[in-house]
Length: 148
Length: 170
Image (tube, rainbow over all chains, first blue to last red; front, top):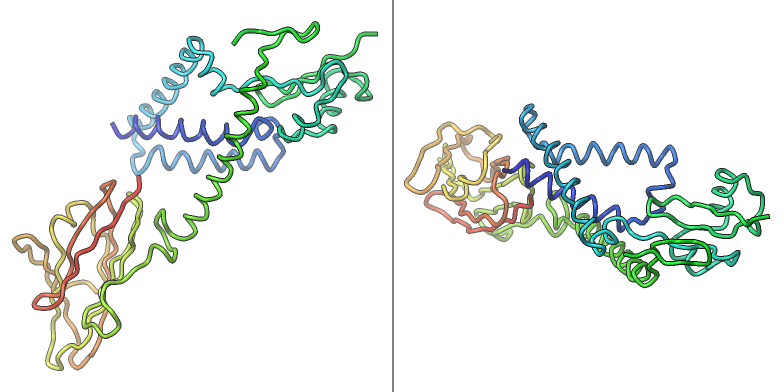
């Protein structure tokens, strides 16, 4: 029972913490962020397994985590509120060429982040070539260029 | 959540939810900071000024040092400081209540007791002491296995005893 409870609680704690940390935390993966994620994985593993390193315990933990993930994905399909809480919502940063500065500030995105996405995804050179810039649920920025 | 149209862009956009989420996020950051501060102070176990405490004052023949908060499967220590020993004493008998011991495992005892005697509602530890010493210490390193509040009594046979409580985090 303990294995299942630990797994469920750990899943929910991680879900809440990563939601609080904000979308950009997940998207801006630098080398150090990658190391940080590895460390988080190590810390989580200790809490999940405790002193029990048996195959049975490991299997129970994995099954529970995947099971909770599936359950949440099913709940998301039924409830738009749960979907919003778990996955967040996309956010328009540039709309018809007009930049929403307040949203950029609150989302901790700056113009350079948008330019990087514009160059990488669309090969654009300047902000005025962007029609829409959307901060997606994943934390990435997608770009719709102006036509012509 | 239905898609909305922004010009030619179709999107599941909910600015009101996003604005509420930002508020919750900022509150969450403050909460995380407070949790870290509380942890530094010892509220979640480990060392920290709010965690370490003692029963018995400096003039007392028995002083008990322990931690108010612990974490399950993480060792913590109980330390008894016995003083005012009579000059002809060659053994000190210390006891811990059974209902406390039921929630944990004793990992080490320093120094090792000569004898451990099961009493009616307690475990009695008999320590050999050198003659003519005024003060000595006994340390029990324990590993809690129970989550939540645990209570116990610790004391010296035919001497003082102290009731104490600890909270063990999961």
